Image (cartoon, rainbow, N blue to C red; front, side, top):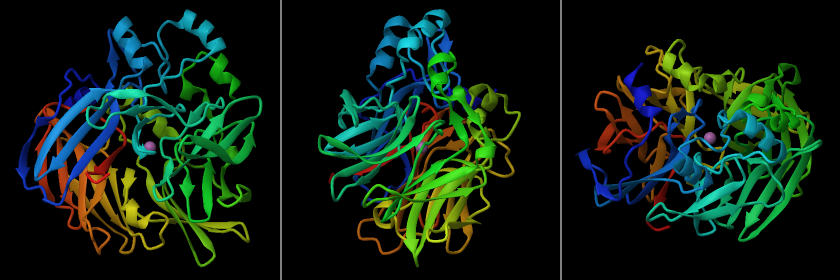
Length: 470
Ligand code: CO
C-alpha cells in the first residue's frame, strides 16, 4: 500500500503543545494569527478500524504564526465518542459510514435511540465569541482556542433536529449564524435556522418525505439556495436497517436535482428549478446580477464520490478519485429557467476564496482548491489549483509524493487585488514521513515557505485562519 495512505488514514500517536517548528523559506511578517484545522485524529480504536474518510475521532490542529515563527499544538477533541473509545478500547458510536461492531446489541439500542457521533470533526467556526468544532449532528463542541481543550456541547437547536451542515453562513457584522438542519420523521423537514446569541429561530421550512444528503447550501444577498440532490433516504431506514448512516441513502436519478430558492426576507420559497441529476458537497459562492441569480458549486455527475472515499477503495489504488467540476448555474427566477456553465476543466474539491471581501459578490474571480493531477492518477487529492474565472485559466502546485489539504486563503491587510495574500495548506509528504505547512504566494502560486510538522497529520477536511485581532 502507498505510504501516504498508510500514514494519512492511520492513527495519531502524539499530542504536542505549542512546539516550535522548523521553517524553510520566509513567512511574510504581516501574517499573524492561527490556522486551526479539523479532521480525523485516528481511524483505529483498539483492534477496530473505521471504514470511510468521513469517519474517525476528531482532532484539532493549530499552527500559530507570529513574527515569522510557527508554533504547533494538536489535541483529540474531547467528546463522548472519544471518551468511550478510550475507556472501552472499542468504537462505541455510529459514524458516517461505520457502526460499532457489537451488531446484535447495537441493533436493539438503535431501535430506541441511534447513538450518532458527537465527534465534531469536519470544520471549525468562530461565532458568538466562541470557537466551535462542527460536525453533521446538531451538537457542536466548543473549544478553548489557546489549549484546544473542549468546553462542552454547543447546540444550535434543541428541537429534535437530526443532522445539520458543517458550513453555516456566518454574518459577523450582525452576529448571526444561518444553517440548514434536517428533522427526520414520517414527514421530514429541511429547516433553515438563524442563531443570534442564545436564541435560535426558524427562518424557513420545507417538508419532504425522502430527504437528501446535503453537505452545504448557498447564500446570496436576497436568497438562500438549497440544492436537493437525488441521494435520498427513507428516514425510518436509518433507525431500522442496522446499516451505517450514509448507507441508507439511495441514488435516485429519476428525481433529478431540485434548487429551492428561498427569500431571506420572509423565508418563502420563491421558486424551485429542476435540473438533471447531480451531486455536490460544496456550494462555492452565489451572487445576483442583472435580475439573475448565479450559483457556483463543485459538481459530480453521481454520488459515486462518497463510495470512493471508503478507505479500502482509496488504499487499493485501483481507480483514480473522481474529480468534481466547478460549475455555475445562471438562474432566471421570473421564467424559472436555468443554464449551466463549466468554469474550469480541472478536477477539484475543498475550495476557498477571499470570503471576507468577495462573499456573495459578482466581482469574485479567484478560487483555490485541492485537486487531482491529471497524469498521476492518484486515488486521493494530490495537488493545489488556483482557478481564475475571468481568464478561464489555472495555476497548479504539485510535488510527487505530496498530498495537500484544503488551501486556506489569508488576505494581506489593506489588499487591493483579489489574490494579494497567501494560501496555506497542510501537506502530507510521504517521502519525509510527515506533514508540512505549505505557504504559497496567492498571486504567483509559488512557494514562500514550508514549515515542518513533527508528525504525519491525517487527511483532514476544513479549517479556518483566525487573525490575532479576533
Ligand atoms: Co465540507
